[in-house]
Amino acid sequence: MRKKQLRLVVAFHTTAGAMAAEQLCRKQELEGRLISVPRSVTSDCGIAWSAPPELRSTLETRFQEAGIDAAGYYELLL
Amino acid sequence: MKQQTWFREHGMILLTGVIVGIAAIVLTACGNPKNMGFCIACFERDIAGALGLHSADKVQYIRPEIIGIVLGAAITAAAAKEFRAKAGSSPACRFVLGMFVMIGALVFLGCPLRMVIRLGGGDLTAVSALLGFVVGILAGVVFLRKGFSLGRAYPVPQGEGLILPGVMVVLLMLLVAVPGVLRFSEAGPGSMRAFWVISLLAGLAVGALAQRSRLCMAGGIRDAFMLHDFTLLSGFLAIWITITIGNLILGNYDLSAVSQPIAHSQHLWSFLGMALAGWGSILLGGCPLRQLILAGEGNGDSAVTVFGMIVGAAVSHNFGLAGAADSVAENGTYVVGGIGKAGMIAVVFGFVVLLVISLTHLPRKEQA
Image 1 (tube, helix red, strand yellow):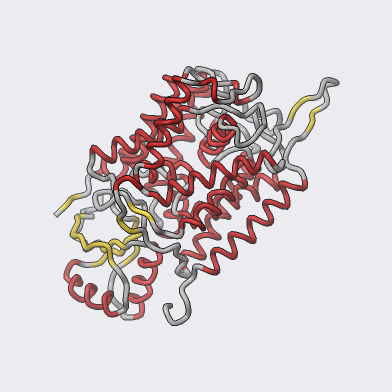
Image 2 (cartoon, each protein chain N blue to C red):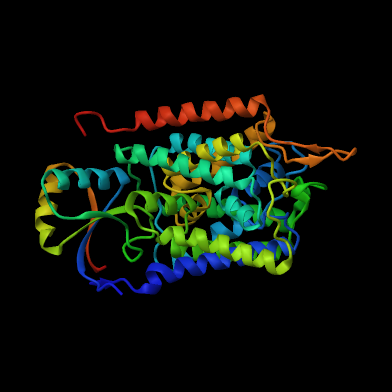
């Protein structure tokens, strides 16, 4: 069984927010990928951005600068 | 720091799929139409008929399964402190999308859940619908990737989130206390029903479990293609496998493309109907079942979508858009059912409407 790793999960209010986050991170070469929002975060079945936890402050700043409205930042073992 | 357990990730969705499958088999054994233990589209159509919104006398009944699903989701969400009243995400567009999801589903004669139930009964006429559903979802995914959004929902007073659960309580009271004010089919699918308590309990169980697991027919396929995440899809497959096994055990499995219960052999239009339903479901963020669950959790936009689906059902029957089942004439000739010209025009018009909504909700160039 795959060993769980600590990840930063960024949830968004809309799927479009997650898409914009992916586009921005790809452009700025920030590590991460889209995932289905973990059930422990929300009962919504949306899409989230998963990244290494050390990128938290960078992502918070970059998303804010780009006008991407994150619904929350969570650290989870995934 | 929260940890994802295996059961939270996969066990709950598999359990939900199995329970939904068992509930569908039990409901059919107790009186619901064959291969229609559950069907969100058909049951909302029956509710529309019972309220007099259409006059197709064979499809009129207040289906307690729908009431149970919404109330089951509401109770579980409240118990888990997940009941959150929110709304404001393009409600008018959602109403129209709900209408066309319903029109597409009734062209095929079933929602995505009934499509899986029909496949589990060996109904090969549902294969073209499954293909269409996948193609519709892929069309929706293309627009999601381009940034399609109906906008975010905002917190609203609790009363807004209680609208659909409240409507369901009223429907239950009407069914139990004053059934005389409602219309009930005396023949056809609407007359085939399990005892209302059994239907209500099955709906409550499915609603509660679907709220916990986020079961969604459209979301499963979307996640598989977009994210290579098969968690939600496993619930879809669990229903299919459970129903297949149940039908094999009970001797109800009939692997065939002819004479299937409440089904037609116009494969192209089954394909296109479910493509319309799949595309619309992705734009809405969930299949018809999921809309009921979200409305139960307090989402006013999903409640509006459900109202749109009920109106879509009424429109389907008032304007002759819904599919007719294949049948056998008195002289023994097999009569292929399906839809007429009006239904075909409605499906094509539905694609145009979905395209317009998709294009007009993409980010403007300066936002992209």
